Image (cartoon, rainbow, N blue to C red; front, side, top):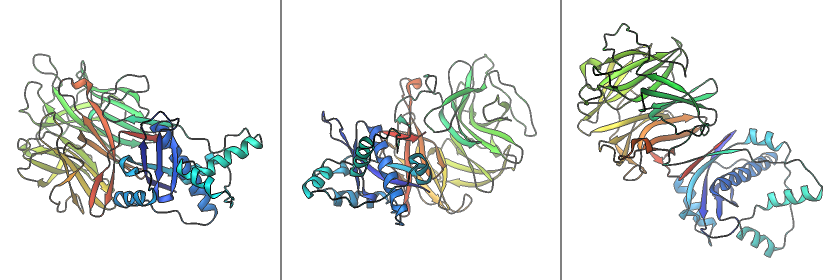
Length: 453
C-alpha cells in the first residue's frame, strides 16, 4: 500500500552537521538530514520503518492529513521549533515495497530510557529506533545494510533541467504520458530545424533524450480532413508549432499529437496541427493544420477520459474564450464543440486532470511571458457545467505557467514553465504537488521535488 504524508523540512541555516530538521506530524516523527534531499530520504526511511512496525503490531496506519490539519498538528506537536515556517512537501512511501527493501520483520520493543536522555534525543530530532538498529548492528558485527535508503532523484524548480547526458531538456509547453513502463515527455524544441523533442524516464527525474520526433523535414501525409500541410514558410524559414500534446489511441494503436500552429511570421493563423506515429518516440508524420469549425485555436491541451474519450481544449477568439471539443474515436478530428468557456476572461495554457471523480481545469491569464495568478475550475464531467474560475497558487502561480498535470500512481503533479523573457532557451521548469482540500484544489510550493528511483 502506498501513502503520501505531509512532511515539514526546516533549514536551520547554521553550520551544524545536520542543518535540515524534519517533522512528519501524522506519525509524530522527528529526524534530520545533511541536505534537503537527505532530509527527504530520512523522512521516507522513518515513515517506512514506523509504518511496517505498526502493520506488524496490527495497528492502523494514520491517514495523511490535508495541508491545514498538518500545519495545525505540527504547531501543536513542536513547541520549541516552528516547523510551519519551513517547506511543506509530500513524501510517498510504498510500504509493501519498503518492506521488501528492509527484508526483515520489525519488532516493537519497550526500551527503558532515562527521561532526560529521551528528552535530549527528541529535542535533537534523533530517530531513536534508527539509532538503536545501527547500534545493534555494530555490536553484532552485521554487515548487511538493513533498511538501506533507496536512491532519490531531485529536480530543482525554476532551473533548466538536464537529461541523462547532461544536456538541457527542451520540452517547454509540453505533455507527458505513461506507456509500457515509461513516462514520455514531449515538448517544444525551438532550436535549428526542430519542432518537438521527446524524452523518457522510469522515475520522473532521470530523462533520456529519445529524439527530435517532429522537425521541419518530417514526413508529411494528407488524410481525410482537408488541411494545409506546411512545415516551412514560403521563404524557407520555420513555422511555429507550440504546446505539443500526445495521446495514445488504443483502438488505432497510434500516438496522436495535437499542437498550436502559426505561420512563423505572425499569430494570425491560430490553427491546430496534427501528427501521428506508431511508436511513442518515433518519427511523427505531419498531417497539416486546420481551424476547428472555422474557429481560432491557440494555447491548447488534450485530455483522455477513463473510457478513452478524448477532448481538445484551446484558446479561441483572440484568447477571449476557451473552447472544448470532443474528438472522434480515432483522435484525428473534432467531433463536437461541447463548450465555450469563460467568455471574455482571456484564459490560456489550459491543463486538465481528474481527481476523485471530479474534473479540474487549470489555466493562466494572458500576460505574455510574465507569470500571473493561476486559476482553476471544477466540473462533474467534461461535458457538464464548469464552475467559476478560482485562484490557485500565489499571484504568479509560483512564477510559472501551466504545461500539464500528471496523475499517476497516486501522485498529482502540476508541471509548468518558468519563462525567461530575455532568453527563451534559459527558461526553466517547475513541478508542484496538487491535492484536493475540501471543495478546492491546492497547489503546494516546493523549492525542489524528490522522486524515488
